[in-house]
Length: 256
Ligand SMILES: [Zn+2]
Image (cartoon, rainbow, N blue to C red; front, side):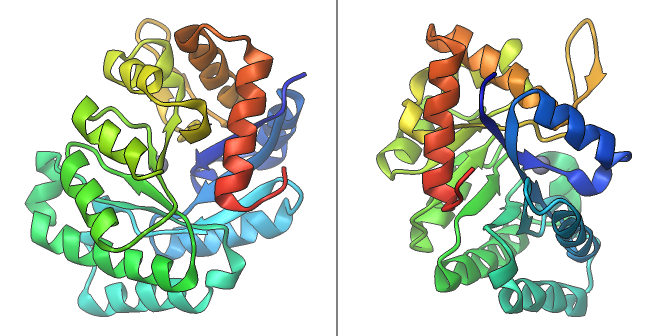
């Protein structure tokens, strides 16, 4: 059996976690990084990590999709909570910027960049890696991370331009591969262009994947990400599992 890590899952949005985690373990998943999206999600993620301490590692974040619905006080409280409780987490995420027009309608580029920069400042001060959402905002997101002086960053489910990807690689940052690597051309290209020392596996579960056969993902589907990466890179699955595990353990300073 392989040993793999799901570096990005929304466990707070998944029911029947006992069964889900059992299936993940049986598929070779050794660790799951549970990301938070807002204050309630951060709290739930922390309690899940306490229930499954041997496998679930928590991260606290504030997703750009949620910024638009928050008051200034809620924003300040969420940032303060992350800052004050950073010793409980392995990373800060999910954070980032999203230029989808539905998101821009509620949170402008400037507002998103401002909040993202504050989160990156906390990450830098606490020396935590960051797990980044960068949909349609790839270049601005990279520039903001770089300008904040961040050393360890994962651009999750990266589908952006090759020019930005080469900036990411040259800066020593990572990307992570989802099960969309089975069919999504831009994601496949990014995986092909990224060296193993900068590549991780994830599911972003419970995201729904698939073109003909749609399914709701869970952490065990990190195995699908592994198999897709192995096919794209023309390497055996066990080699890809070993290399991505090593990269993840090193970047997140865990020992899975
Ligand atoms: Zn996510």
